[in-house]
Image (cartoon, rainbow, N blue to C red; front, top):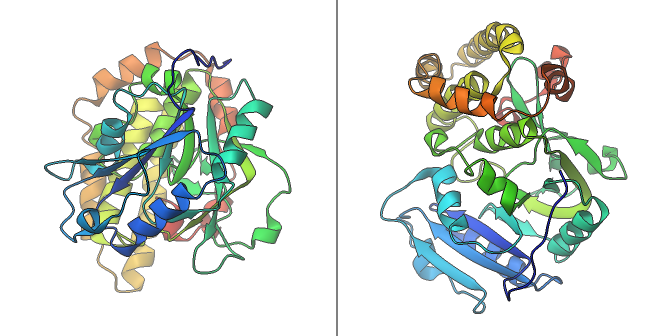
Length: 336
């Protein structure tokens, strides 16, 4: 789908949305790195989900390009990003986690990527581990036929990444870029997801509309993965396992759905056994699965999504990872 940029008004090229919830010291570092970008034609909104750690009050905004928005309650990552996108006139919307530090050329490389791929509507940045820059935190999101998403390349050496851009299923919203028109066409993030897997859901819906995602190798962002919520906390386990089922029920074409749901349940059972052997609690995970299997209201959402679908079931199948052996090599923390 070709992108159209309307530049007849003084709006910046991109709006960057940072959603904060008790990010502490990470938030200021994230904002400072954004202010130091070599590409200056942006505006930024910091959407705070009623943080209680004083991170918003302590935040020093570098200049007039930055606007704070404070929600009265914790709306979740999905809804807060939609709040940040309201009224946007820039042709592009970027999402950036508060526990990231973008390299100075991040936005410049993203802008160059849009020029190189004018028919692409989603772009991802290369995420590297903030604690060890030799390791990958994520190189785009992959989605298996079992409905299990993961951050590509997580935990592997940066040197093992391809030396060029690559098409992936969807971008990780820790540092992603979306064409605003397409973002609005699918009504942004699904707020019922609250957080976790909401970026894969958005990417899935955009793909069903005919969009594609390009992962930009040289757009680098350092990421403190799961620094705020914890990789295997009860919070993370509940929302990630619930939302994976919702992702399937809403987006997967019917023929593929009959394959995906049983495989998803089998995978979840394997994870439960692994956690139990390590004496880790699984109650939150089981609760998430139970909620996910009762997707009240999602039948209406599914009808809407599938009615707008522009690509074939075969085209969807080609976007998925069918080799389930790859799941064995993914740490639980990366398959959220």
